[in-house]
Length: 443
Image 1 (tube, one colour):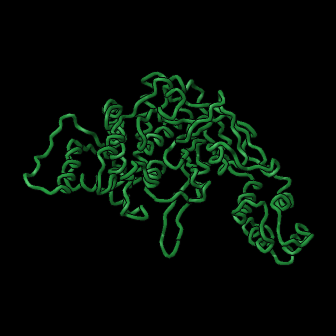
Image 2 (cartoon, rainbow, N blue to C red):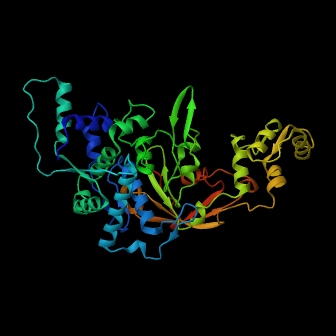
Image 3 (cartoon, helix red, strand yellow):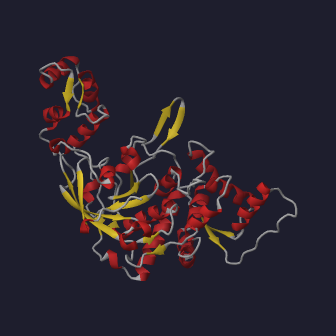
């Protein structure tokens, strides 16, 4: 079925904005292509489409490596398979299952899922150009005609979706495959629904100057909703309702921008159901994952207390003003009666300096609790789909040995490694020794 002219115009406006760049569309016009050096890794030719390719890679890794838990309280189990050496048919099956899952998640109706698949027809039929038009209209017609080959197929059942995706597999791996899937997610979610989920309806999903996917697009791919923020739930700021991540996600998200204090990532993304995190730099997305499922276990009381304390210590000084002690104790459901708080304050601040050290506070109330819910060391793998950002232009899963050290005892929380600096927003004190001493790039 061919989409109406109005639908195509609305789709192009949402994705590309009013000033569509030919160069940016070309950068996005690639298929889902497998690395010749890592059988289960997707490659990215140019900057931009990582906003679609990396989330697909993340969910592919999830379906490839992990068994889904029977309920939300169980940790996922690692599949006992040689997941880095799948046969072509096995890889295809996992890939199609991944696309199906992401499409079903994006459906606006969770009860009666209707999925719209978008493809580009080979037979190009360009509408006739009017004899007289101004330059602005001419550019719009040129860009509009590039999408004249769009065709829609509606799937109303899981069986139909599985069959349709399988029949379109070759097209998805060829030119426009990434755009086809992007448009499928958008039309399945609904253009009006997506605009209503965005803080501002004036922005487009792909930056018209640099071609980077917006946070709205990244969130749409991760959680199925095109919200604009990475915090948990809804916040009201200056009378405005600003939407964040609605619930715990299967896949996580961490960003270097949080290190620079441009945003605050909530627990729904920092602690996903599976130990897989999309990593955002200023301009690119990569992926970090591990087989260590304990990394997504529930936090220990000690860790919860440390996190609450640090909310009142945003500068990471290791202490708070004594006047904030009642608030911290109340947040942690500790006895916060004034008489008891006064006793505790005198004990933690005997010299009456007016500050409460984090170490003293934690030792007072949580000394007997497990300090960590994560192991001291674990294997991590990093993925960067851009060939130009990979060692010897080979897209591989780059291995590293991670350890968690007590940054307060070591006296140093910073790192010379950009990737460690980003990961420390999730695991303070993390240090990684990379295979062959090659630190992977986030760009």
